[in-house]
Image (tube, rainbow, N blue to C red; front, side, top):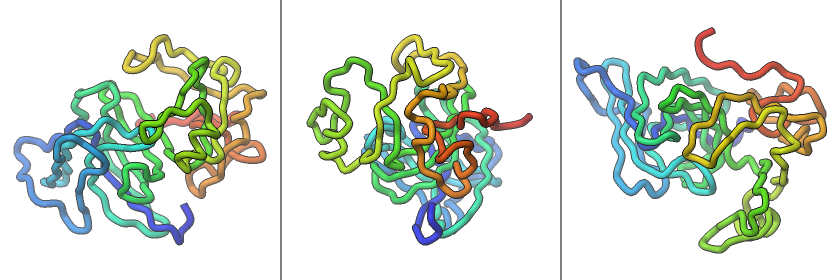
Length: 239
């Protein structure tokens, strides 16, 4: 993000609980932390603090697609910044429940953001959402996009109607990834894999360089996705 743009840093929860030890006394959030629900969550969330631990309870469908729904604990951030958090637990309310840290441009449901989170099964996700340059594979689906209750047969049609993904591209998982093993649609279990791009994939060099996020790359521009072709795979956690 450019330093002139105002973004916010968050500890976030989607349909899960980060537990405070039983001996900790829950207190209001310390300044400058604030909490609120973002998007249509269905049930009101809450947050408290005690003995150095945040407890966050929230509902919501997911952080995904064009409208997120979850509980935030956040504070404003202008310019460069750093946040370090340890996820003590994630209640397994759903395979895709998540807890982690996020930089988000605004508190609207469709805001652009970048997130590093932990799932109930122990997997780690790094995602960036609507940076306007994403790759999509919808196979043989005739109407792959829905926005505002209207279906759209193509990415240009969706972009024109929504104002989103104006520079998104269509890719093919069968030719773009060196490894791709997703046996069934969500919420089925997906085996661990590294989705490294092949040399001929149109997602190579199709990204946008973001300072301190993906500004180290091997070609003319960053690749789409979490794995830069020609670079070592990302590594998170103790090692």
